[in-house]
Image 1 (cartoon, rainbow, N blue to C red):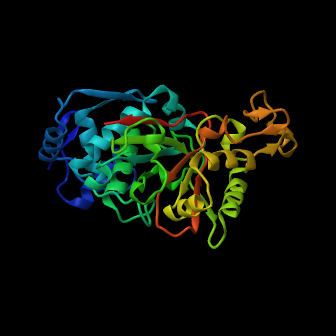
Image 2 (image 1 turned 90 degrees about the horizontal axis):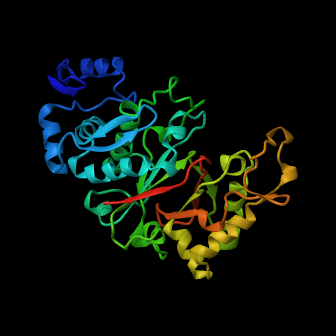
Image 3 (image 1 turned 60 degrees about the vertical axis):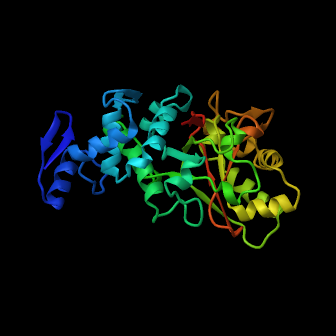
Length: 342
C-alpha cells in the first residue's frame, strides 16, 4: 500500500503486522499499532477540514515542526480518529502552541507531564465523547483517539521522543492520551469554558500541563470533609505547584460532589478559596536543600501556597454521579492553562 510520508507517498507492507513493524522501526508511532494513512483517507480528512493541505496551523516545539493541515490529518488517521474529530484536534494544537503553555518545557522536562485537554461545547455530544463514568479510562473512541492524536503530533512533528528530547524520568499513562469533555449537562455550576469568558455552548478546548491524577476517596462524607481531604492531597510539598509553582492546579469533581456542595451552600469560587487556604504549608515543612531563590515559589511570609491565587485553581465537572472519588491533577509548574475556541 501507499501511505503519506515526508516524501509524499511511500510504499509499505500490505500485511498489518508487517506494516506495524515498519512504522515502529521508523519511529512513527507511540508504540501502539496505527491505522495506515492512505492517500484516500488523507484526502477525505482534508476535504472535511476544508482548508488547503499546506495551510500551517502552528509550529510545534521543540523541533519547531510545521503542523500543516495534511500532517495533522495523517497523525489523526494513524491515531484512529474519525474525520469529525479534526476541529477539536486543530484547536488543541492552536492552544498548546501559545507561549504561556510553555510546550517546549513540557516536551523536554524530566517531569511526568502531559497535556490534559478539557472539551466544552456542543461538539462533545456531536462526536460522542464520554463525560460520564470512566471518562478518563478506556472504551470511548473520541476521548482516546483525540488525545492520542495530539501525542502523535507531539512525537512526529514536535520531535519529542522519549530518551532523546523527552527526558521524563518515568513518564506516565497520560502521555498516551489525556482528553476528556466536561459533564456540563449534569453539573450545577457553570462550565469551565464559561468561567474563562466563553459563551455557553461555544466549542472550546482548555489544556493543562498535568502531572497525572491523584485519587481522593470521599464516599459517605459531607462537603467540608471532602474538601479537607482534597486539600490534604493538594498540600503534598513534593509536587511542582509548591516548588516551582505558578499555573493552574486542576480538580476533577463528579456531578455528585457538586450536588452535595451546592446543597451545603458552596459556590465554585468559595470552593477554590477554601482549597487555597487549606492546602497551604509552612516553610519549615520543606527540606532545606530545596531552598533556592524561587523555591517554594508562592511564598507569603513563612507560608507557601499551591498557586498564586485561589482563582488559579480550576475545577472541571466530569465522571459518574456518585460522590465517591475526586481526581487532583497537579500542575507542571512552569506553565499556564490555555484555551482555544472553534
